[in-house]
Length: 131
Image (cartoon, rainbow, N blue to C red; front, side, top):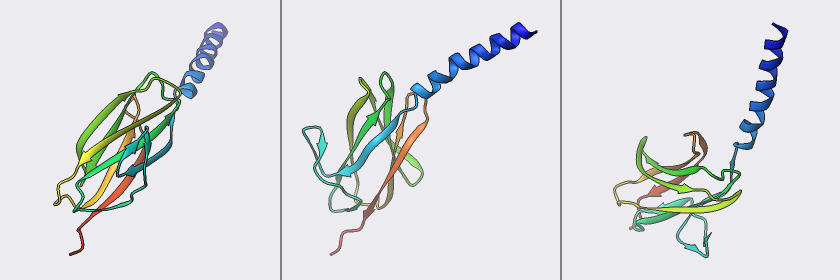
C-alpha cells in the first residue's frame, strides 16, 4: 500500500508543473481604431455608432502552441469568434468587428485559451452618435 501512495504522490508532482506551465495571460489588450505594424494606434473605450468598425488587440504571454480565440459578445450573445494559433511565448494578435448602428450597448471581447477557459474579458461601450 505504501508503494501505491508513493506512486500516487510521484504522479501528482509530475502533473502539477504542467498546469503551471500552461497558465498563460493577456499582458496587454485594448480596443483601437486601427493596427499599424502589429500595434494599436490608440485606445478606445467608448465608440459612437456613426463609426462601424473596431479592432481588438491583445498581447499574449505563455500561451504558445495553443489556439486562442477572441470571442466578440453583445447582449449575452456570441456575435463572432476569431481564432489564432499562438506560435511563441509572446504573441500579438488582433481581430476586428463591423458593428451595425443599432447594436448600441456594451460589447465584450473574451480572450479564450486552447482549453476553452476565459483568460480575460474587455468591454467597449457602443453609443448613439450625438446629432
